[in-house]
Image (cartoon, rainbow, N blue to C red; front, side, top):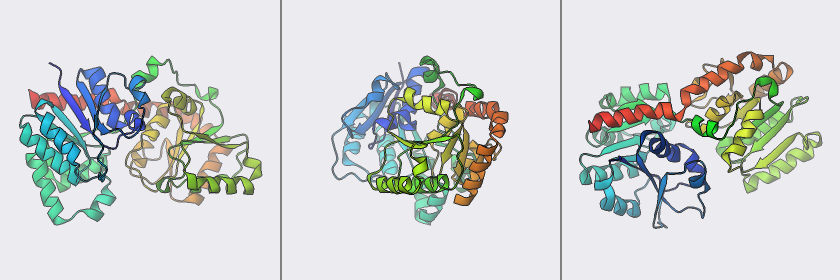
Length: 377
């Protein structure tokens, strides 16, 4: 009988199906034979990825909860767990929140032999700011008596968790966010050789949201000589950011046909074509947990220029296959150096692509599958 794997993430949108929320249950279904279901509110009319990128993944729509607050327990989810927990072999929850505590306890009471897997997706800096001795004590009990498996994305996070919660030693696995190389091969996408790429710089995400700090990239672009290079911002543009774009063009009319805003690209094949022709990927975020865009950029051999976010050191292999920048001026200098002498990218191009192999979903989810199998043995 197939193991039933249920991921509960109430605020799932179509875009989440291509991220860890959708990809973990989907890859477990496709490559390891699980019966996988994503449980969510119906947050938009269409989930196109169900027929494209994650075909075969089931989705269960909860009744809408108008009072729902992220991190807080939802009565709709509780009712779902009371009704179905006994039929769920593996329950997958996200983050160390009040909701996770409540859902996990209900699941364990309803299904004592079930496997509870929590993808912690933890930001250490924020965690240290909010944790109290009481919270730590509660989570220690939860990890000891309720949790079966927990995962982290970055090595230093794993080390920190083990130092704070030794009880996790036999329950903790490293599971970074990844890329589905099988999807790419199935769609006959071949990684371009470096000399086939274009002089193109890209950034991908929700353009204009505060934490992405795209103002910084615009400022940098206005202060460097792009020569023959072009720049593309890929993703939906926030309404209040449009005036900043207009101001940028008014002050830099010579960049109107050089810097473009492509808009949202839902088709993964089309999105990957942008990575495939780009040479440089820029990320100016003030904070990130583990952005999948970084793994996508690595896969297609993009030289990554990123701020000092949590995954920066591991993704750039200690600054050897990318650049970690401290501030706007640092970014301006680094970007100009590469534009002036891009041979430095060509020399490490294969190393960048090889690094991405550490983030193939199938390989990393085999670790989770084995851990689940050991518990069920």
